[in-house]
Image 1 (cartoon, rainbow, N blue to C red):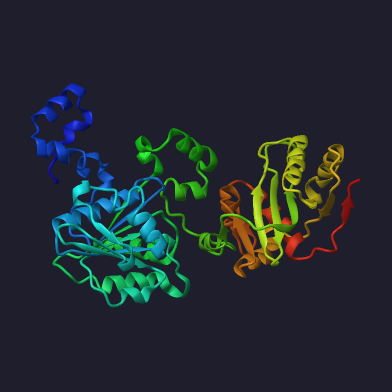
Image 2: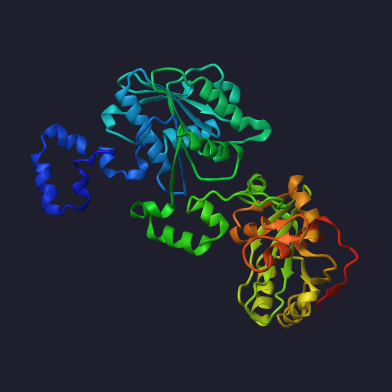
Length: 442
């Protein structure tokens, strides 16, 4: 059983007790006090006891993973002058901007007089006591083949590019060079994503050599803006993406799904380029109220690729309100066409667009096949790299990851309304549904 920390009482102490305690410290102890991470850290941010080789900190964004990794490296460097530490990120730019120079990076933690000197040209940090750390890119696995280390901190391993097995090759090369000192160890900090290296480490945790710490964004609520936390709850809630990125839960891909989380991450872009065509896809609800009306905006750029621009879907809306949402999305994105499924009341869209005096072509399409069958050629466009997502669309992405080959839907909700709207829009832009009937509004 672990010994209780003699300073645990501070978490519940009153101000007078803390003042008396501070008065009892000598000058040097008071100087060190503010830099003592063991006092300020949550228990989950401190290295676990035991004879582990890898400590995997897998938690939501804002949990404090970077601070956790940096403080562990700092402690290693200060206690072991002979330490040779590898700092590995998805690329050298992130290793420097996050692990070294970031707000919670190595140049910002610990007492200023014990902080390392950073030599960017050598990719090296050197502590006053002699310990050294070197930056590496996981995108260059061969750079880790020769060097030897006693410790390593690997950041955002779920983000490492695993094309041609680079992520696992970088990890394996690192482990084979981890042979200095008497107790080589690795800390890996990451937001969870279902990728081979992460699943491999989780499987290895059964042996005891890998210890896993999990956590949520909200664990660090005391150090995060209330507005940020409120936005996270509002925008992501308990969506699959929210469970992964905020709650720190590893969402496994559904077996046989047409889309995978890894595929969507490869399709991610921060901003879409200028689009020569913009289409609004609509999947009207089957009932007058209660169901979601899928409304997805997609653009086509000059290079022939499609870009998902917005998910403007309307939940629990009556016919007038969801049709109005279609008109507003078309106007906001300067769309040149609306594609709506006629089976589910597409005539209502035509009626409300006319009432709004929006001069916009409307194509009414009739679903002759099931949603999954219609989605299969669209999923192939993603696999070919011809569709990009301009940002995060959690509810939409949860749905498309629930479409399973063979015809079933295993995602959230009763029906993939957003996913169907996406399919209609991309089919119009990329697959040339020329035979569908067309209604042009005056």
